[in-house]
Length: 234
Image (tube, rainbow, N blue to C red; front, side):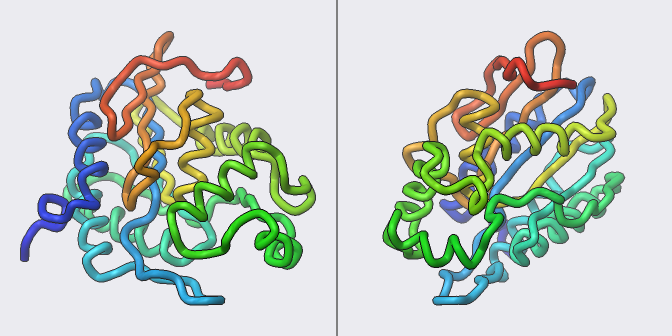
């Protein structure tokens, strides 16, 4: 069977992130946040699931992560993130890595699903496209949704930081599988980065090594030193 990560163009961001992650010192805690793997296009009212190729890529992704760490893997309440997290965990365990499947992360963004479903068409063309997701993100970051309907993005970013830092140790590698808008929102609030022009692809995201005093940030663009917000606590 051909290696999916090496042969599919949508895997290039994941390959770049892995390449730089393997160069980290291994002496500091790491947080990784990535989008789920390749999925089918959504149907109206449906919850699209991972493709067979996507699950193979997620397995290979897990098998390519550095060993010698204590992994803890979360996902969201959406099934394709659960599928991705299990495939990554299987890849890690194939490499004899210590890995705990932490289950669904107890953070959400849509607080009033019915109200959001009714209101969303006023804000964007609701289609399963990157452009539609980008429009939602822009409106979310600008605070155009009522806070009782959609959790304010800054509150989301702070809550996510608290959750991902919970019980973290020097050899910890905390990994969350979520969605393109989640990844982009945290890149904005945690690191001051604008959404990528080519958007957030499958298995795309970021890694931050919590090195003191200067953390290291890895994205598909490469590795760089970064600063964390004043409200961040390690």
